[in-house]
Length: 473
Image (cartoon, rainbow, N blue to C red):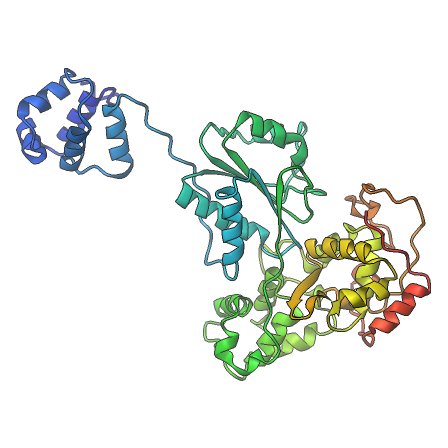
């Protein structure tokens, strides 16, 4: 056999493997409990299709496993070796507090047979990290190939097909999960609606997972909103052991200990840790930024510092890979809202605590159906929390947003004919940020002193004074 080329037949491969182990035909026959003649005939190519049991005995005797055993068995069947599924990049560290979401996403692709699933939520809520976990699990359990593409960079001409071609993707006919990270509306990623139909037609076993701040609103889309992590209930700080079982606390403490290895969640530190998690709404990116600052400030000092303006928490100047700031995240989320939805968000932000639907309706002055539609949209965007209580669902604006509306007076919006599918508000178009698109607190860098929190009655009076009607867009 020519040693300069790989074995082309099963007989050549058998001889190559035997000689690599330094075995004679007699030695291999003894280990495999076969005759020397059988070994000689197979190596000479006189046996075209050896029995499956014979191949198994030979593979055991040659101590083959993994990919090498698969190649040996494929050669015996005279079939090409099946291509190994392309793995994703392994996730870094443990994903905390997202077991339920991971299970639901995997089931959407496997049990429910979904082909297009989108994870939607506020920037920094952990959509990309969750997508990594789902991709890794589907690769391990279902043997799917995974292709990953980030929307960072310029939009390719020609839509998703051209984008895929530019990245040299060969999806083939095997089960494949294509992850489009951050490729939703208003990004520099590919035109998702313009390319998915063609990809799905050509690749029957393709599934697509999209992470986006806004729903795609495509036929057949499984849209899964991702909320921030649950924050500790009031009183949980009295028991450090119970407090430590919250995923949001575990995340914060883990990141803090990376910088301060001696830190422990003690009874003295528990109140500040719990309040920090509540102040930052359980938003993973905000918690990681806060953890970096604990290198120079205690949790209690951070709570005091962030009490007025938690949304302006920045990354330390010397840190790397900080990404988008919280300020930019909030700005993007607010400018993506139509004016009327932003108005209701401002009214809710001035009311203390949580509100039920029976309080939201008089606050807005609009019918129940319209209020529910807007609340659904704001919850999907991740700007308010919906909390299940014995008396029904209640709603709460993120603490990160409340200070931004404290000094704002609702402004009337230009009246116009409102269509069911009105175009995106100009404030959401990159490069166009009108001065009245967002609260003034987002447009000014210097910190402001907090004004007293408003009440539901006070917010309702603002509506009667000229706030716009809240209509679904």
